Structure formats: C-alpha cells, structure tokens
Length: 536
Ligand code: F6P
Image 1: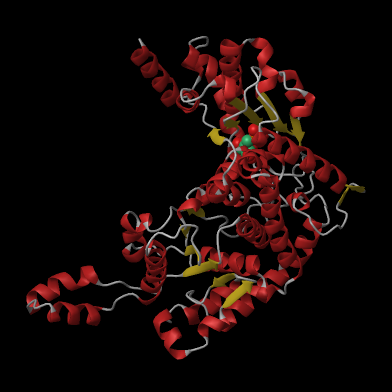
Image 2 (image 1 turned 90 degrees about the vertical axis):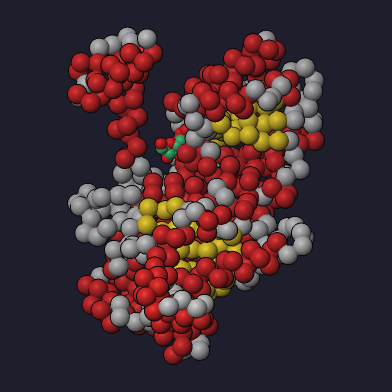
C-alpha cells in the first residue's frame, strides 16, 4: 500500500481532462467487458502504472488463492466455521462442489426443482387457498438478506412479471404489515416466511400477525394452505405450522446477503416464473466463471474492487455512490448497502488484530435522473469527491418516444461533467458572452466553477433482463469479496448486528412497563420516562 501512496503523488496533480487529451486510446485502455457487459473505467484518476500497482497489490494479498478457496468450499468464514458457497446455488457447470467431502449439488438441484415447481403451480393456480381460490397475492415476510435481494430482483424484473402480485413486508413497525394486509383478501393470499435462522424478531412478529390474519378470517385449519417457508431451520418452520412440502431449505454456507440465489428467491420465481429465475442464476454463474478464470487485468470484479480500494485507502474517500440510470434498479443500492456494508464494515482482520487500513465505504444511491435533482450538487461541487458507478442499459423495455435517448444522454452527461468540470476561464467567458460586467462576473464566477477530475465508472449492458441482472449482482458480490481480501477481513460474518439485537431483547420488558428502566444509562432511562409520559 505504501507503494500506491507513493505513486498517488504522481497521479494527484493530473487532471482527467488532460489525461483524455493526451491519450486517444484511454477508453480502450481502461475498459473491460464480458460479452455485452462493459465497464468503462477510463474516467478514473489513474494512469497505466496505477492499474499495474493495484494488480500487484491483489497478487500480494493472494486474491487468486482466496478466490479459489472460496469456490472450492473451504471454510473461509472462519469466525463461523463455514464455507462460502452462494456460487454453488447458481453453478451450471456440472462440476461437483464439495463441503466437508460431500457434493452439495444434488441438494441444491433438488430444492431448486421443488421450489420451481411450487412457484409455477402458484402461478397457474394449481396450488390454491383453503377455500379453493387461486392466489392473486403473495406476501414475502423477511428482513435483510431475506427481503432486500428478492425485493430488488422482483422490482428489477417487473417487465417479466406475469404471476401473482408480490408484496414484501420487513419492518417490525406494524405499519408495514398493516398497510400491506389492508389491501389483501385472506382467501387469495399466500404468505412466504423467509428467514435463514427462523428466529429473527421482525420476521417472527410479522409472521405471527399474518397467521392471525388468516386464522381470524378463514379459521385455524386454513393456516397451512396459506403459508410456505424458506429457511435453514426446517424443524422451526414445521413448529410454526408449515407443511413439510411447503418448506424450502438452504444451508449455513449461504450468507443471508447472498441468499437470493437460493430458495429465498421464491417470490421472484412466483413473480416471473421458474425459467426466468433460472436465467437469473445462469447470469450469476456466467460472472462466476469470468471471475474464476479471467486474468486479473481483464477481470470485471477485480478491476471494480481495486479501484474502490484506490479511492478508499489512497484518496481517503469514505463513500461510494451507485446510480443506476434504470428506474427498475431503484432498490439496487439498498441491496448493495447490506451486501457491501455488512460484509466489509469490519475493524479487525481475519486474525483478530485491528485492520491497518480503512475498510468498507458507505454505499448509497438512487436512480438517475432523479438523483440529479437531489444530491448531485454535492457530487459535482461539494468538498469531498465521491466515486460514482453509473449503470445503464442500451435497450429499454419500453418504446415510449425519446425517453430512453434522454435518459442515456443524461447519464453520459453526468459522468462527462464530473470528469471534465468547468474552469474559471470557461465560466468567465460564458458570463461575459451573456453580457455581465466585470464586477458581476467576479462575484458569480467562483460559484459556477466545477473542479471536475471526479471519478466514475460506467457499466453499460444491452438490456436489464434476468440474465444480465444475475451478472450485475454477482459482479458486485465479487467486487466486495476482492476488497475484503485486500483488507484482510472476514467478509462473511456480521457480529456487529448482535449487540443491538441483544439490547432490544433486554429493553422490550422495560418499554412494555414490566421492568424498571433505572438500571439503564441516563439517556435511555430518560427517554423511556418521556416515552411513558407521552403514552399516558
Ligand atoms: O441482522 C442481520 C441479519 O442476520 C442479516 O445478515 C440477515 O440477512 C438478516 O439478519 C435476516 O436474518 P434471517 O434470514 O435469519 O431472518
């Protein structure tokens, strides 16, 4: 890393505008593709030696070794003693994938076939509710990885949605389930309880409310006909009253934030059909094969991951924006937040010692063009440059006049503006041409200067279909993996979410008035006192 910091001294004074002017081949030099899926990374603050040094960093960190160990099913999630094999869920190669000497592929295939058949029978109406009516609505009850992935994918694939309506309830705030249920008829509603552990407070609370909704309207005996479950904890699903043939399992080697590829994808399969869900899996597999076999220099997740390290660790940039110019990817950044921040939001290395470098950035974003009219001001002229990933489809699903041409023009304009900026001289000339006098120009010009030299990647693909969505999601999963290897952290545990859960359990009786708040800290006790006063 010291080597990169040293190298940055050479790069920092360079402006992207000049780098483009000096090198007509810059786009070709700094773009990588997997078939139609292209990453243009030429608008980054890099020169050829930068990439060479970043690749050397990856080799020193043994990125290829870690990657191979992950695909081979070694227990690289050391704090939980688990393999990391979401790639097995989308394995289309016919190769065995072994965990503890056992090929997991037969189990993966068995669940995939069962869930596909169930999804398709819900879609055709062959599976019915207790009163003999087909399901018009499906409610997925889950949170975190058991919600964000399937919710994001279902929305992204809206043009292919020809099954029952699919709703997602995650928050323990009763408003979420209340607002969902009030539009639904119990007779025609199927609930999917999705929870890796089947213990998560939010999911269990919402599942109990949904169960009562069915039991109140249709009677207790109707409950099994209106529920299915997805979990690694099969006996717990059965104890909830879910029939064995409606329980779809997965395995502890699938992290929650990587689980949309498992039976957690059931709502997606119900919405778009099992065939399209399999095409999504095939897209993920295509990216896996690329990540596994392409040389580091031409490897999309590697390039994306290393550029992130360059900005995070050498330039000290603490956030990363992801801006899809694709409205249906409007939950993509929300999904990436869990994927990236739960994976690499770590402060100790694999060996338990403090990390030497800053780790995961804050990941955020909203679709363009909406973002342009909201937070882009700060990205263009704020004091802290923020690297941006733009995502863009060449072909829209709709042929509505020139909407898509305008969308594309705006996306390209933003990355160009960030790269090029507008100099003081350019601003002064513009103002003079508009007829302003010298005093007015001097007062206004500084406000209109854009520094430029602000980095972005543009990820351009043919069309947002299930296969491409699979490739995009796997691209970011592997990007996060690459960064975790460089930072030498375990990207697959999430101990940081535990303390809050534990304290919430302790506080629940206090909030309910069944225990005394005095043992809490002054702030918490004070807030509880005020809360009680407000509630009368
Ligand atoms: O709170 C963190 C977390 O454990 C996530 O990692 C997970 O995706 C989410 O909670 C939901 O967990 P489960 O699927 O077990 O209900």
